[in-house]
Image (cartoon, rainbow, N blue to C red; front, side, top):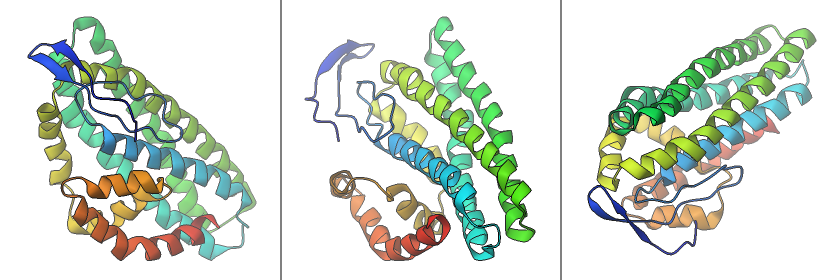
Length: 245
């Protein structure tokens, strides 16, 4: 986690305390402000990690290794479920609340966020279809086309996450309090079933530095995440290795 000392600035409701922000590999920015964006940055890290892994693994996976293709297809289902939940929540709850509070010139950034979601979705659907084809009727031609689509999806999502981290979160830090963020976050959490949580916790924490992971577990409510991680991490790692080698 960032070691920045807490600071404060004048805001609409008086002094606004800056909280330390998480910085993870590949992250474009972590704008200062009163809102702890740890969970957002963890999800972004996992999205970047998975698309990079898929883009690397697909051209190297032997066409005839049906077990590996099935494992990759299964892992894609987990990744795409998490990303769909994340983007749908932003479109439904986060962007409208930010639009309501933003200055007119800042709304351009929020409109771009929605447009970028619309650009990314067809690329992800094409990747899903390509993996399904490789799991069912693999061919070198399908693998080559899938590899190209994965690179395009990786680059498109990377641009979107950089834009979000640099500009949109800076806006959020200006207009939100921690309570505002917690209120929006309740919508995201409301759709998380126990089954989803058991799959998403080891997925989100895979490859996260140990000190960051332990810091998360030390936070209020972190004990439950630790218990889920301990319960699921070995099975997740086996599936991870089967998919990506």
